[in-house]
Image 1 (cartoon, rainbow, N blue to C red):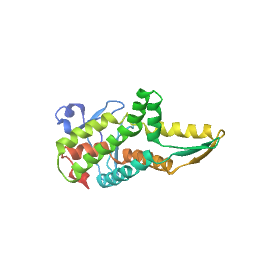
Image 2 (cartoon, rainbow, N blue to C red; image 1 turned 60 degrees about the vertical axis):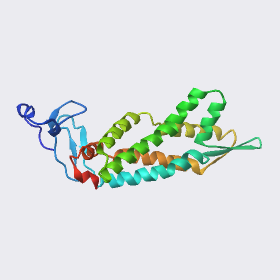
Image 3 (spheres, rainbow, N blue to C red; image 1 turned 90 degrees about the vertical axis):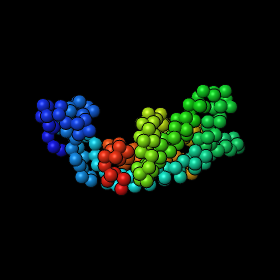
Length: 219
């Protein structure tokens, strides 16, 4: 990336042409990148941002795929347990209901929000933001929704639920006849799609597209 401007010249530049490193706080001129390029801090090597190719189209495809997997991931059986002649099928939703019926309403609400409610809300926020950029409508609402999404990122804990499910499967293998359901594959696919989406949906390009600074980010 280009060398940072002289400190005397930085004060004369508008704020939209400046960028600060998140790691070492070095203030420098914002570089112009082509598709596939990334900008790194010249002092500490931290990746400032990357310019990815067709970020909106690729992100839209991932969001729609994740939304299609959401229902089977949460409502289809994750596992079937056969113990002493009794069989039961467990889903994410049945786990929430089981906690609620056991008198642990607070825990049931927390599990519902972190494993079902907030992940769905995040996907809907991403969809609205991407559509506002793609169709060039409601940019001000897109900015608000994207800010809300940034606050929700820390509360979606699909990976924690997935890890807990895997631990439970390992512990139950020696106690009962256990068979895995299609819901587990859908849940794992949903988790992978959300991670892939986080990598693909470049925040730098999204903010620029929402503010109208970079029309190329819409393609």
